[in-house]
Structures are given as C-alpha cells and as structure tokens.
Amino acid sequence: MSLVNKYVWKVKTRSTPTKKGKWLLNLLAQNRGLDTAAKLKEFLNPSLDQILKVIPTDMPKAKKRVIEAIKNKEKIVVYADYDADGLCATAIMWEVLNDLGADVMPYVPHRIKEGYGMSKGAISELAQKGVSLIITVDQGVTAVEQTEHAKKLGIDVIITDHHVLPAKIPQPIAMVHSTDLCGAGVSWRFCWEIAKELDESYMEKLTDKLELAALATIADLVPLVGGNRSIVKLGLEKLAKTKRPGLLALMRAAKLNGTIGTYEIGHILAPRINAMGRIEHGLDSLRLICAKSQKQADQLADLLTKTNVKRQDLTSKAVDAALKMVQENILIGIVSHEDWHEGVIGLVASRLVEAHHRPMIAISRGVEFS
Image (cartoon, rainbow, N blue to C red; front, side):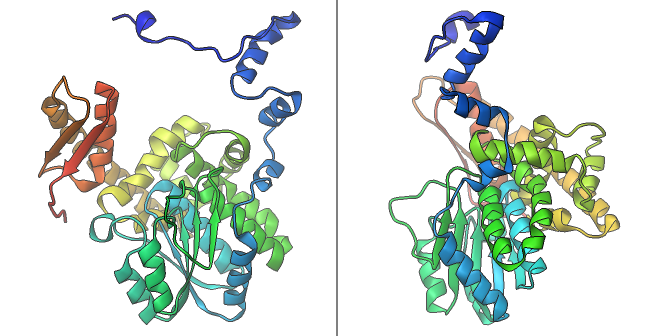
C-alpha cells in the first residue's frame, strides 16, 4: 500500500486565499483552533503572562499550608516521580522551598522496589523521621489509600499533578492540579505563588528555573500550546545561558555543542535522565540536575550516559524478541518474557504499536534485577 493511499489529510477548515500568501498561515492557524487574531497573536508571541494565566486548583489552600510549615520549621518532603518531568518538578519545588527557608528534602522512589507514586511503606518511614507535610510532584491523583495512610500518621499531603483525574480521587489538604501544564509546569506555577507571598525579590531567580520546566515539558510530550508553549520558548532561552553544572555536564557527555532545541532535549538529554529511573535509581538524575559541584556533575553525567546505553541495549533486545512473538491477525497484542527488564517494557509496547498499529501489552514476568 502506498503512502498516498494509506494516509489522508483531513482539513478541518478551508481558508479563502488572500494576498501576500497569508491564506496558508490562516489555514494552518484555523486548523489549530486559532480562529481569531487575538488567539493567533498569543500563539506567535509566547509570554510569562500566558504561564501565569494557568490557575491550578487549590493553590490558596496549598500555599497557606506550605507557608505555615516553613514558618514553623516543620519537616517537609517533596515526593517525586522518577521520570524527567517528575525529577525536574522535584528539583524546582525542592530548590525553591529550600531557598525560602524550608526544612525540606526530596524523596525519589525506586521503580522496581517501590513502584509508581507514593507507597505506604515510604510514608511510614517518613512519619518516623518526623515529617509532617508531603508535597507530591507529577503524581498523586490516584493515591487515595496512601493519602489516608499519611493522615492516620499525622502527615498532611499536598498533591501537585497534571494527570487526568480518575473517578475516585484522594482527599489531601489541597490538590494543586491542572492538565494545561506538565508536572514540572504545575510545580513551577505553584512555586511562583509561594515566592510571591514570601519574597518577591526571588521571582527573577524563579524564572531561571523555567529551563527545567521546559526540559520537562518537551520530555513529557504535552501539547505545545498556551502555557506549555510559553514555558518551552522562555525556558529554551534560559537553557541557552544555563549555569547549572549538571545540565552543562550532561550536554558535554552527550557531545552537544550547539543550540539546544526540542530535538536535543527529547532525543538526547531527556532519555539520559529517564534511564536512571527506568533501570537504576532516579535519585542520581535528581542529584545531577541539582548538583553544585562541577566535578560531581561530570561524574553523574557519565553515569547517566552509561546507564542510557544499558537501557538502549535492554530495550533493543526486548523489542527484537517481542516483534517475533506478535501474531498478525489479532486485535490486541500481549507479549511477555522473564528476561525483560520492568523498566523498559513500556518502551517495548510503544515500539510494537508503531510496528503493528494496534494496542499492545508487554509484560515482564516478575524477575528481580540488581
């Protein structure tokens, strides 16, 4: 079957040609919902105001609780997700709260040992250490039981997340939620409100952290419209002048010497950050992002690069095997193997979907990896 027959362009709106070739711009704009001059102007001119227009839920309640915790010197934990979005969100939240005087530490779960999101075991350990406030980033909207467990142990929970809300949602102190930004974008937006309340002079420093929000936005493949588009535009400008030892070290390790754009982030930098959370421990990626010492950053960048090579090898071998296991005439493909690493099966399923154009499920059959 030729590409001409297989793929059909569906044009939502047909624009009347105008002079100077503006009809093509009008057509492209209208098919993206940019059907007024104001919408088109906003799309073509991303700004900080567009980010601030996004108002996640419950921010006043969440801000009040965080400020109270800072003033009372309570122990706060930023509970991470282990992908690039979650780790950048953690770095933003942890650095901002720390700079504003909080007694705060990050917690990055281990994918294999603890699974996704908050775990009751980790919450119990944090309670024993005197933690009284947990702030989740890039996860938490499904943590119904975990939030109740934290309450019973005297820990308040603030959830900051961007994932679509399920039918049953947890009942934390506050749910800082928006699907209009990625996890790091929600984290940054919430931090803006906290900083504005506690120290307006910090706002300029906070805009520098848009480089992390941009990296996360690109890595998480969210739609590049509205606040997301502005984060990427402004964040890439910050990234071009970054002084973060970790990001500079990662660029050198990846042999990136020129302009850093969406391709370099999506295909070169983000996979290295994600690799630790997939097959080792995402904490080392967070250490890289937040590194102060260039020597430490260089060592961690080397570790991330080597781990990504390992991840690529594990993925390649699993995909090669999986492709041979899929039957042609099935509606949904289900494949499994005891040698597949749990951290790459999502990538395997994605490759199978690309190859067979149907839903695919890849399963790792309960093997522990050291």
